Length: 404
Image 1 (tube, one colour):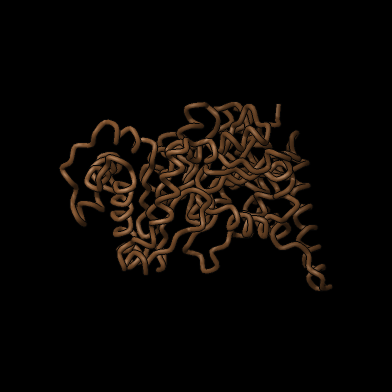
Image 2: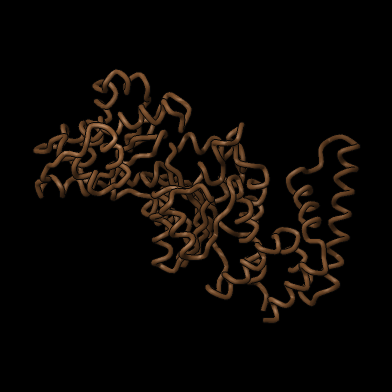
């Protein structure tokens, strides 16, 4: 109880909110090359140092408490202490989705907020590796991540990108393990199915799908994206049609299968796909032969309303990618913060829960199943574009874990 009592004293007796504002100004808006800017930044630093000094003098562990108050809100600090009491360890790796987690399509610039980037850099500099875990292509994510976090961090040897939802892992600075193509390990017949579908999916598509979609430049996964604003009415319509077409094409490509069987199988295994079929052509009353079902069990058809219709492999998911990234990074005993919003992120969250290897956090607009999991575990839900609040909590957890 002594740590809780000390935290109550810290946040009751000191203006932590203003302290955090000064810390954020110092971190996010560093000094520029003009005299006025330099003077203003120096004033901020002086005020920050003065407020921290007062906390340092008030507590036996004042340096740690000053650092905690300068970064975490009262709620974040107490959440960190609760997690420390529950798990008895600090986070030692960050596993982070990008879209609708670190950044939101609702932002006009669709960039990761500067506050979030600053905290990621600070946590990384403090010794916490970062694993970016995304469905995007490697080249796309490398571009904006390097621009946001800097080339030095990306090539530090403590940074990895799991891309295309687990098809590959890119960990700069690790020699022959720098790039692992996990799809190379799949059976030849599975790879052949993907190759054939990729070659046929747009040329043979119905006119509205052909004109209304484009094929994302993945190395392996086949992803149809709308040529309209994500989530718009037209995007929803064309992705619904693209999903049905993808199911039918898969039935045509697999020897011995039919479109009715693939529709029936995925309607049975995925409620969202069933909903699309019910609103459209209907769900076939078809029996799926055992040999066809065995092959379909290896192939994942993903539906993201107004965003994508996708064919992937159940053997290549974000969990497989994260495991490979942790192996390359040499993290044998991970306790991770997993942040994400979609069903592919949920698998990583469930994996770390089963392995007692971390905690999960999600934005409040995440998929319902993701929110259910997060609320049932540690209730780490944050506002849209509010990923920084979770990173601040991790910062406090790391500092508090260092106390005797």
